[in-house]
Image (cartoon, rainbow, N blue to C red; front, top):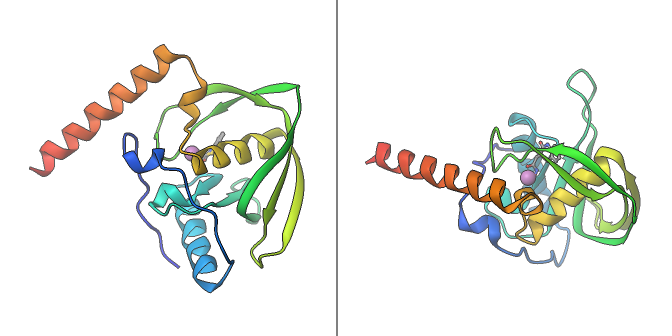
Amino acid sequence: MAIRPILILPDAKLRQVSEPVKAVDDDVRKLMDDMVDTMHDAPGIGLAAIQIGVPRRIVVLDLAKKDEPPEVRYFVNPEIVWSSEEKSVYEEGCLSIPEYYEEVERPARIRARFLDREGQPQEIDAEGLLATALQHEIDHLNGVLFIDHISRLKRDRVIKKFIKQAKQKESERG
Ligand code: GNR
Ligand code: NI
């Protein structure tokens, strides 16, 4: 188990499309454990493997509140098979775009298929924060960030800010 560094905007890897997992084996489970450690340390409610630089279609979620016991969920090769016409709006954030929050509109309810930690096929009906978080994570697997769902003006502004921050950090390192 280990906490791994989280990639930050504008890291080009965040735009990569992740590859399907062929078999849910011990290597995949070890990676998922590192993802959970990294997510809990951050802390965040979800993490996609590409956020720690691994381009595989793997997501972990834990929507439990701080004072509640952890409720980790594992999703391998998740696919949305149905989404509602009805939309809902949540204020989203992303560990790869720290300290930036904006409202995003997405389908209010989805049905997703995925493999669980044991490689067994599962289906889930999600609504509320679970639906939002799962869509946010599946976007990551396709190289999509939540800022792609906001206005171009706001998106360009936040990208510019993070490019500037990255340049500053680079010059500090010398
Ligand atoms: O920790 C996170 N919180 C969050 C809040 C609203 C909508 C989505 C999220 S996911 C985010 C963690 C993250 O960046 N996952 O990719
Ligand atoms: Ni994210």
